[in-house]
Amino acid sequence: MGNFPRRAISLELRVGSPPARQAIGNQSDRMMSEGKLVWIYAPGVCDLFHPGHVEFFRQARLLGDRVIAGIVSEATAADYKPAPIMTMAERIAVVSACRYVDRVLPDAPRQVTVDFLDSIGADYAVHGDDITPEELERSFPGLVAAGRMKFVPYTRTISSRQLIERIANRLREGTLRVKL
Image 1 (cartoon, rainbow, N blue to C red):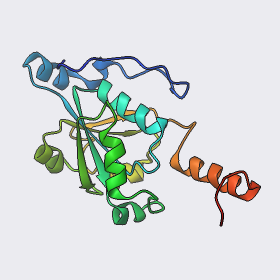
Image 2 (image 1 turned 90 degrees about the vertical axis):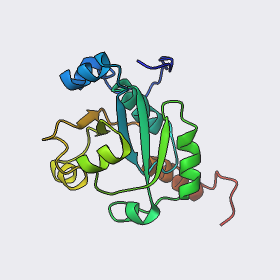
Image 3 (image 1 turned 90 degrees about the horizontal axis):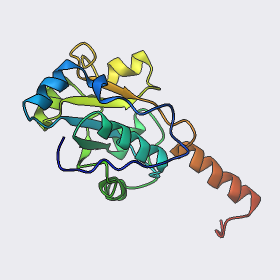
C-alpha cells in the first residue's frame, strides 16, 4: 500500500464511516496485487481551505495509495460558483501542505474525462456525494460508465460559503478588528 503511514485523525466533522478499501472494487484489487499504486484524482476549488477539505482528501486517500488534487482556476470556478477569494497560488500552497495530498495540479479542467485521467496517471476521480446527476455528467462525462468515478460523503458541517457567512455576520456585529 505504499510507504505512507495511515494515521487516523479524529474530527467532529466526520460524516458516516470512512469508505472501505473494498469499495474500490476488483480492478483496484487487481492493480494492488500487481504492485501498481492506485492514484485518485480529487478536483476542487479549495477556497478558504478548512477541515471539510481535509476530510475530503483524507477520504480520497482511503480509496487509493496516492492523491492528486486538481485546483481549478478562478475563471473556471466562476463558471459554476462564486469566484474564489484566495488566489491560485494561495490555494495551491495550502492544498500542497495537506498530508493526504501527494501532487497538486494547477488550472485543473472543468471536465474530467477518461482521457484526462489517463494523461495524469490517475485510476479514479472522486467527488463528494452531494453532486447532482446533471452536474456529474457535465463535470465527469463517461467516468461512471467506465468504472472510474468514486464518491465520498460530503462534509455538511463546514464550507467556504459558511465561513464567508460567519465573517459577514461578525462584520455586521462589529466584532472583527477590521475597519470598513
